[in-house]
Image (cartoon, one colour):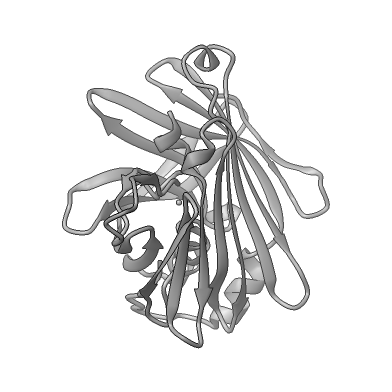
Length: 270
């Protein structure tokens, strides 16, 4: 259940480059941007798309309800942001796993770029899996701390963390890009994530429908592992995410969306 809650980052246990390090969870949502065509100012896009919000999603495995995930974005006038993903298992899923997980990315967006400063992963049930990634842009290094051990890896000037890439991909899709790639600081080494637009579809709920870009995601040289639907009229917010794994279909659907003033902007049931 945990692996799906972190959206596109396909969090799994990884080995650090330190031989003494045990496997740790590099959980949940990189940027070596393959920037294609820019139709208008990215600064204007950031002002239009990157607004504070709180979105609630329901998560199912086939027909079994697994729980809920809440995404929230807070912004300050200086461009700094806090982007948080908080997952809670349902009562039924809680019989098998009590994992309540919080991921958080802190950074800022400047001149159309998402610049992460710090990423944290906290598992309330398995604290040995907690980790943190700090970005030192002057030294071009990302320092990862897990299980009391810290190690560093070199990064490029557009590297993202596992949550911040979710903000950057929204901006690139709004530009009209059909294919983008991101480098993500994720534990033992930098990983590459690829997003490819494969079509447009209308995603319906009981209360509304949204015109979406259908996007497939893959990691490195692997095959597509996630399909994501980004709603144009919601600032390219992902409203539906699916993953087929071991014969099971995992689905995450938008349930509620609140705008910066706190009023209900969208509500559906799944």
